[in-house]
Amino acid sequence: MSQATAQKPRLKTSAMIASIAGEGQATRSAPFGHALVELAKQRAEVVGMTADLGKYTDLHIFAKAFPERYYQMGMAEQLLMGAAAGMAHEGAQPFVTTYAVFASRRAYDFIHQTIAEDNLDVKIVCALPGLTTGYGPSHQAAEDLALFRAMPNLTVIDPCDAHEIEQIVPAIADHRGPVYMRLLRGNVPLVLDQYGYRFELGRAKLLRDGAEVLIISTGIMTMRALDVAKELEQDRVDVAVLHVPTIKPLDTVTILREARRSGRLVVVAENHTTIGGLGEAVATTLLSSGVTPPFRQIALPDAFLDAGALPTLHDRYGISTNAMVDTIKGWLS
Image (cartoon, rainbow, N blue to C red; front, side):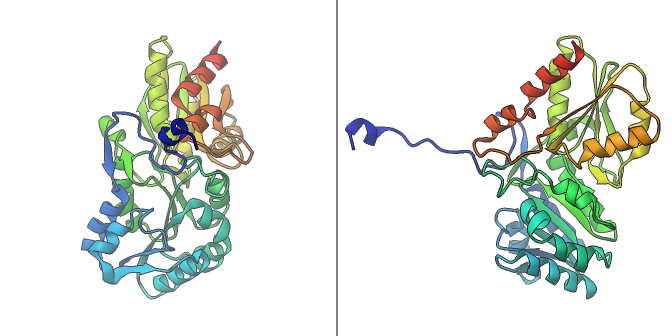
């Protein structure tokens, strides 16, 4: 090995980094873990369960606070879901964590048969949703919303930021029945606090109004949509943003009310494949109600996605702020 090669600094990969906070953006550390601890202080029935991913789903914070109520099931996601069902039958309220790919693909049948069919009070909270990791198709849950939307009895939630996650935890605890929630872990951006936002299960919220474009978004794409609206404002393009955190049940009343306003391009933005997610849910709602505005989707392609650094991948697949700005400008031209 030459001296030049030996002295060359090693480049660090960001492929597995799940945080999508921009440089200098306000964040809050492990909002789910801390919110669950606060909930458990009030509710003795709350237990935390995971399949060897406590540290990587922020459940280690709960484990430290309530070690006697923490269950580490090992690398056995099907066992995890079956055990959670058993705990719920006995009166516990399990909060179960794993990666979204493992819940939606590996343990789907166990969730379907042991939890959803009996309408059990199990909360399934899953990290690395959509394209929030660069480790390739084995870890990218680009189709989880489509799979879980199709499961009867299951409530499906895609939060935007730390502010919303902290509010969702007690809200889903109050809701009796199974819930699937996408999880942002680690240092999670703070965005919605600037808009006086309050999460309500099953409700969409208009965060800003605009006369030319309506972006209907969920999850991390809401923070992107808000950035896009600010960027396009400089070009005198007036953009509204409707945040839809609850994918199922869908707030069709609010969506139809906003989509009926004439003269606006309707764009659905989601960190999910174009198939089976929020875009198709909104399109079905509009068509079945006879509401037909100009309609477009910003979403991940129906493909196995590449591995790599998240900023590169988000640009490549059109879900970065800059890519969204360029795409919407093109549609308006």
